[in-house]
Structure formats: C-alpha cells, structure tokens
Image (cartoon, rainbow, N blue to C red; front, side):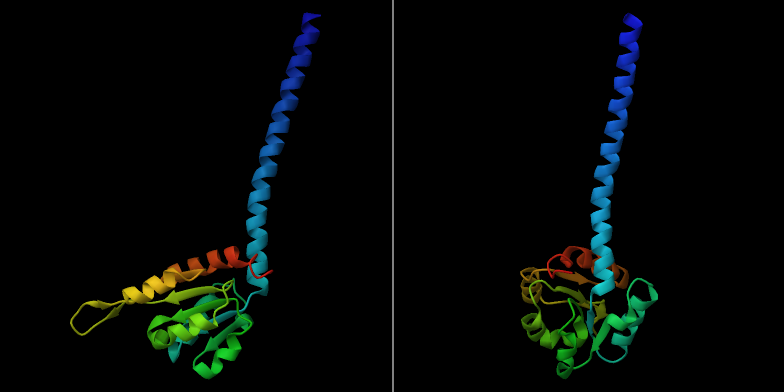
Amino acid sequence: MFSTFLNFWSMAQDYFVAACFLCLVWLIAKGVARVLWKLGWGLAKREIAIFAKNDVGGSLKKLLADTGIFNPASIRLIESKMDFELAKRASVLIVHWWDWKEDIDAILGYKDPADALLIYAPAKRKEDGTFDRIPDATMELLDNTRNTSVANFRGRLLNDLIATMIITSQQRGN
C-alpha cells in the first residue's frame, strides 16, 4: 500500500514538473514570438524616408541596404522640400540634422503621431574646436514629440531604427 502511494506521488511530481516546464516554454515562446512577429511585419511592410542632401542620403540608404535587413526598394530619399510627397507612405522618417535643421518644424508638422522620427546628428566640429550640437530648445521640442529618437552614431541609428519598427508596428496597423 505504501509503495503504491510512493509510486503515485512520484508520478504526480513528474507530471507537475513536466507541466511547469511546458508552461515556461509557452510563456517564453509567447513573449519572444510576439516581438519577432512584430519585427518581421515591421521590416517587410514598412517604408522608410531618409531626409538628407547630397551624398549623405545615398550613404545612409547604403548603410540600411548593406545590413541585409531592410528592403532597398522601400527606402525613399528626400533631398528637397518638393520631395516631401515621396515620404507620405513612410512610417519611419530618418532626418540628417545638419541638412534639415532649418526645416525641422516642417518635418515635425508633416509627421504623423504614429510615425517614428529618428534624428541623425553626427558630431560636427566648429572652427573654435568645440562640437556643434542640437539647440536645447529643439531638443525639448523633440523630446515632447512622440516616437522620436536622436542618434549621434550610425550604429546607434540602426539600433534605434529596429527598436522603433518593433514599437510602432502596432500603432500604424502593420
């Protein structure tokens, strides 16, 4: 009788451990799968508009294309205000600060609240040896704008781009 009870108890423990393990696997898969699903749709369907002039736009487009993650056909270069219409379908806007700093208000007015805005402001040395930077008033304005990020390095820009594509994919219904 006692050995039957021990056999039953041992079997119950085995089932309990197996059930806990399956629950753990399911919870992990559910969380990871959701992020991967959102990233996959974000990369497959999203349009990216790069606001940059001269060689900078081509360089940034090449940077994105060379990763092998982004579809080059879904990347639009905006080199003048007349090209703003090309960015209409884009849900991610990348702005090279030094090329568009005078027009940032127009870009912010154009941006939909669900769109991601990434400002790329690489270090720029002034004649006195100090580095130029985005003015504090503009930084405050950018901080108060939804889904906006500022990056000084290309690697950081790529990281922010992937993160914003995951975060904003649900907001636009993608």
